Length: 404
Image (cartoon, rainbow, N blue to C red; front, side, top):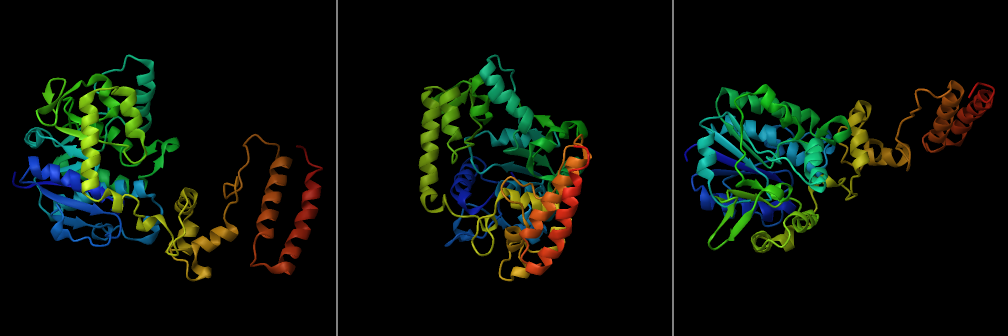
């Protein structure tokens, strides 16, 4: 399989899962070159020469190591945002003929040669979350409606051919992920995944894999009958299992959804038990709770989601704090600014009023908001606060004479 590459993207706590994935690819695709995209500092004792990966890629290798960009993404957003640029990197720098992405919580059980052959016919390969309509309302809500929110295709898997059309897809996807890889469903965004809903419209040569043996997961078990055993071979609707996606393991969602849609199917529970044992063998106990480098400020304080969201929405904050992780100098610390000037509980961090509110009410709310910010600012001093609050209080009393 010359010129065939595979990669996955993780923080250090997912290294045990990535090792299981890489070993399974080695077992069934011995000619694959496997890349680990590590969005983190290597954990203690990490030695690439002793790992089942051929190459290590970091955000710095992709030109994505600017502190402001890193801070703007949660751990999940970061690990998915780098997927497009990493795909570009492997296609360009490695001269790959074909590239496959697998989520770290996938294990391959065979049929890789079929995926490689499919890229002879298509510029890219995608797997839908569901390939058959649900008939039970519970499954409609759990699966189909979830796909409407999070994406039609599961981006735990992607195959791309290294021709002009495949590179055009990679360039488009990478550009979108550099700017818009966020978990913001209210804006129509869900990390890297929702973007691929558009891909078949833009790139008609894409192949959609509907074979039940690929990307088997709890969200499609209602129409995939899994039988057999690890010893004798696992089959899905009578076809050999290609790869299984153990999504939601750490949160407990995988076990809950397996019980819900897999019932007491012994093959499914055997697969789960095997995967648990494999992760344990590869260091889950030691690394499973390892904190991600960019999940904290440099003094160890955990970063809140709302701190990231406010920062990435405010160009003025990005200019004022080009390294928002830094805390040593209070005058240049975003964390210190947040503690003094940032939103309090229930405060969105900026004044907002209903568009149909009476203007007297709006002005009063704005003055109250401004007064609260002045009282919380230590930079003004007692005299400075008094000089500003006095006139504000007078204007506030006058607003009570206005309508609303």
